[in-house]
Image 1 (cartoon, rainbow, N blue to C red):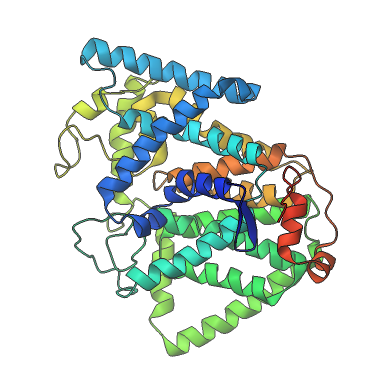
Image 2: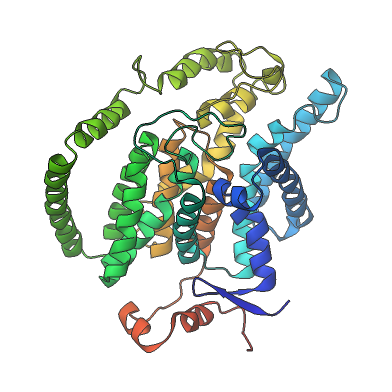
Length: 438
């Protein structure tokens, strides 16, 4: 298993790649759909994997750091309580596995952080390129019916699809923020056209898919990135000023051209964007989320500490009647899901690492990898008002935490490195833990 393979100019041992492929990459919905395009199989795989990974973490508990042990310990408190509740009130060891999978991101974050530390990974550039290629491949296979019309599409299995002519669900388009910020950072540091082209491609992808939750999250992430990058002297203020001026001029030119060629496009996009500031209006798609919040929040306050747990699955849905009985409340909003099922204790446990990253955003000793991933992770706090965050998001939070604790490596000037040595040589040098013999 010592054979080395190269993907996107990144060197992997076969063992490393298999671990990343099966425990991280397959957690991305549109990638798993390309591999196994049946929702039942995908969901079953995720549930089984969550049990396996949690068992792996418990087996390696002594190798965890102190704060990681505390988090797993607190998660175990919730799980043990749920097991006793299930055995006493329902006669089974665990009445609803979904109660575990809803909480599993706590353990998944720690798993990805620990596996990154154990294998001495440096995945940010690889993941940015992965999302870029993945989007192109997925749209080439499934994107033929894409249009701006937002026309609803009836499907037998919705999987990672949006259910309308936008094709891809917001939770997967949200992940495009990773390459968006990464390639912007590369362009600002190196000034190469290929990075600007990749950034603009990601920007256009996020724009044309019209998920307003992603629009708002991307803008927030870009603002957070610029704040941290300037504060940590990763990019000079002069470059940011020139970029801002160039962006304004380019936007003005594009706006003029689009208004002449497609005169209805700008009013349409403006109308879509305006709903960000009025999500609860009667004719908007955000109305259902507002209704859920108004309905379930008072119920959550009735059991604020540990939530409704299994009883939340037993009760009838108070808003709609089209979901199967005892299948849960099908929340759109990540905060409300945790608050209702697991109470404030579970809500805090799940999001506390992201809150910690918000605190670290004000540090003046961040690496460029940390800056990119902190900006993306904080955007998840905003996205959670619209959707439940995908599991792979929490993997990126784990990677970010790993970069924060990683010892800084002195790097030569980027432009000199790219001229003197091929990319794969740089990666081998940075991965100090391994010596690649071939």
